[in-house]
Length: 282
Image: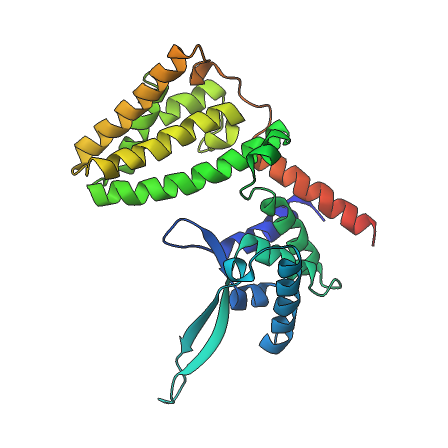
């Protein structure tokens, strides 16, 4: 299977991903059922039940990963609406489902690879974090910054921010001694629209995560209102964190090395390697 086809297959699972009000990702079971090529809910529901048992056996709370939801489906010809059962699945729940799916389906193998790679990025303990490789730490920190930025955007919007590019650049300028996101990208030698966060090491990502979370807390704590005030708050927080790093004798963010491979590239290569191995074993 060619790398482009693998990437397209991976994107299938991304397109049906949802984000809730807390910035957490989830998948609806009935949408996943269609992607995994199950035509009957009854058959797919059996797979879900097996996944729930596996979740419970792993000492995880099934209610955290398989919360049940009720949906109303409009019926034709003014018939009475039908109520159906669905599930809001965590990434881990999806991983367990594809592990218990029909192994003869190629899309199941695709799903096993995709969710296996992505599940590795879920929250872990401090002890487990110390045992991770640098790239694994990058994946972990990047996942947290995504969630943090989503939450920060909601708080900033409530404060009156409409120009989010200006708002986020203010934080970067404070932390990176005047550099905007585009300046950082140019310094790192990135292609147009390539994500700068995907091209940071774990230490640099951690500094940005601290900026993101502390800015959100400051906006809420001070009940900041107005776009200009929110922008200044973000800039000052970035600058304060920079001052703190300098005072501790740390390395300035712009002086930290850029990893040789972006997280997107690592993800594509890992996905391609696993799928190639899977196809070779057939």
